[in-house]
Length: 506
Ligand SMILES: Nc1ncnc2c1ncn2[C@@H]1O[C@H](COP(=O)(O)OP(=O)(O)O)[C@@H](O)[C@H]1O
Ligand SMILES: [Mg+2]
Image (cartoon, rainbow, N blue to C red; front, side, top):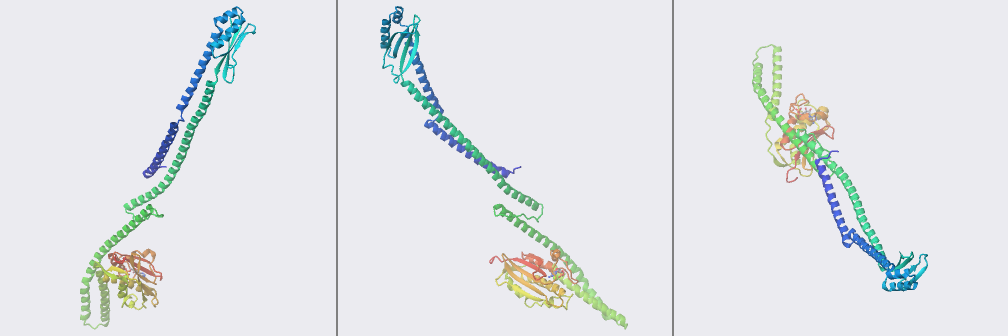
């Protein structure tokens, strides 16, 4: 899986935040452990306690050594040796009694002969109390093969103290071990928890940033296509976030560029056609008058009496007159097209303009030469009650409206020569634009032709010039408007003009 820079940055941020959290938590945790140390639950104190047990141990060793020395001192006393050598049991008893006086830690002295029989015995009952004292019996050989048994008494207290201390150290050792274990355990659990949080955050981060980057990448490639001049791009923009907004703005921008490019292209094309129309009008118009005059003169000056030739001349003169009239009309249209003025926009109210423009307009007068005898369709006006303020050149827009109505009347009359058809002119507000529509119930225009009907010289009529809609479109573009050809609800064609609403009302 390759990550984009944006994705790497987001994931880096997630990891950084997680690590800072982890570090902080461990630091505070460490603080808590130090706190425990400060209170005294730690290994050093434990070691200290253990070494104090050793002090007891050494004390016990010293006590034992002292006991051994005392036993030696008693057994190897010269008086004792003499009493044994002399087999003087009384002296031996006196010696033993004496030893008890001399050594306060000796509790009993017993002298035994080689057969183990008792020769003498001396003891202190108080010292022999086992509740008070810890008793240790040491034996030493006597000179004649007999033995001395010396019982030494040591106060129980240091042993008991040692016992208690040892128990305490044991308890404390568990405490220290527990504290270390507890903090270690919690650290491990915490790290594991945080790691799983990091993993989940990374997964979520990848998914979220993937969604964003994928859509940004789509936009980027669309931008590239626009850069290469492809203005047909449209990026799907579902959702409500900033990227969807950006996408919608992008689409609107491309649409605007497309519209203005189409507009520029159309105006350039129209400009070229206007040049052509001007030259054509000029070239045709000049020879018309001499031709007409010459034919008239030939017609007038014939004095002969050949009736057949006379008739031929009459016919020729009539045909020439007629064709010249047609040519003059074409020249007039070319001329009009070539010299379309620049629109001079003035504030006006669209519905009022439409009513004025259509008042006194006779559909019959618009029928044209191809079907002069057909019944004209009814002309219906549908205007919005709300005022629709616009900026228009009334004279030019009137000519455009005239051309549209003329086309509609002719199309309807051609399809229904016996009448009954209708042409609707509608004006209304629609959002930020004013709409002017000319609709009819005629044959309509095939989908494939709806673009090129606006091309100059495109016509399907025998007497048409194909200039009418070109003039209309040029006029509309000069009004900063747009025009489209769609299917009319009435069944025929619908030409829809959109003009910007005037600022004060928009
Ligand atoms: N209302 C309409 N219904 C059907 N076809 C139409 C209509 N308006 C225009 N057209 C078609 O568009 C062509 C071009 O119209 P236009 O530019 O006015 O030239 P012209 O009227 O001289 O033919 C017409 O020849 C016709 O085929
Ligand atoms: Mg026309």
